[in-house]
Amino acid sequence: MGLELAYSDDVARATESLYAKVSSVIPKVEWPAYAPVIAEINRLKKEKGAVILAHNYMTPEIFHCVGDFVGDSLALAREAARTDAKIIVQAGVHFMAETSKILSPDKTVLIPSMEAGCSLASSITGADVRLLRQKYPGLPVVTYVNTSADVKAESDICCTSGNAVKVVETIAKDFGVDTVIMIPDKYLARNVAAQTGVKVITWEGACEVHERFTAQEIRDYRTAHPGIVVLAHPECPPEVVAESDFAGSTAAMIRYVGDNKPRRVVMVTECSMSDNVAVEHPDVEFVRPCNLCPHMKRITLDGILQSLRTMTYEVTVPADVAARARVPIDRMLAIQ
Ligand code: 13P
Ligand code: SF4
Image 1: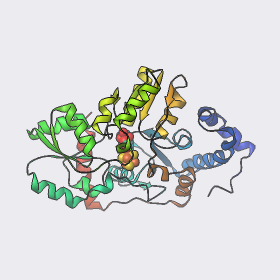
Image 2: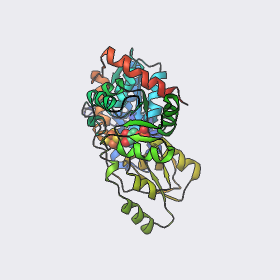
Image 3: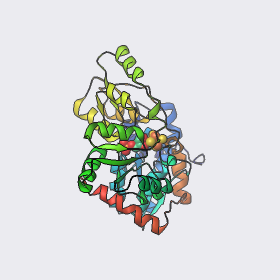
């Protein structure tokens, strides 16, 4: 796919300004392979009335060169609800595409690979949530967006890492309880509990990318790079968050760099984040040990082109499930 596209003078000209943006993270010799695919994706988007929602973990040629809207899970969900485009291509993982479809049921939602899953989403089913409710009657179920539509459909409210603290505080107050069921990420749940004073009953789920970071690793960064600022995603184990200077969603980490302009920083999260943020902040030194998310990396430039050309893979959610899943998502989105 994309092999028949040539790096012509026209393509070089049309993509010149895009290359200027990513030249610090994409070697010049690689650009002739990317540029024709980027130009064709951007042409097809216009022709078909499509918009690409790209998560912060996408590689730089996707994030900076074809993404129409980039952000964390929360921002992408808000944009999916708001966009006028007829077609949404989700450059992210399957649960994000499902959320887009639930929020925009009349739009065509495409994902370039059906194998772009998530270890958190696959850790729990709707039936598991029903059992939890039986075991803990009366407690609200706060469900991380990194879950299937079936799981959301059984929930009282959703959250992302960007709003989890606010969501948990709000729902505990609304229900008049001091404990919530927060699923499926045991680490996010414990990190939020530590910040709120609300007790959590959680699930044995974890992000396969963030659970691999250790507190010792953070101490080693500090020794090797004196003065380094450590930013961590709240899917990391609590002892990693405790060793960090700041914990927040992917968007919150990006904002931290923009607002504080640290001299040296390490983002304890998926690899592409540092590349994407470094493009915008040439004066900040990024130390870049990281863990790859194999699911996010299923989304490639060629896959996006294929998706737009063949209108695959269409993400659907049964209408009854979508209607029930929309309630906790809307409840989350109503919290500012
Ligand atoms: P954000 O909501 O912070 O973008 O995180 C999504 C995710 O999958 C992190 O692993
Ligand atoms: Fe899921 Fe972790 Fe990948 Fe995010 S980084 S999509 S939580 S496996």
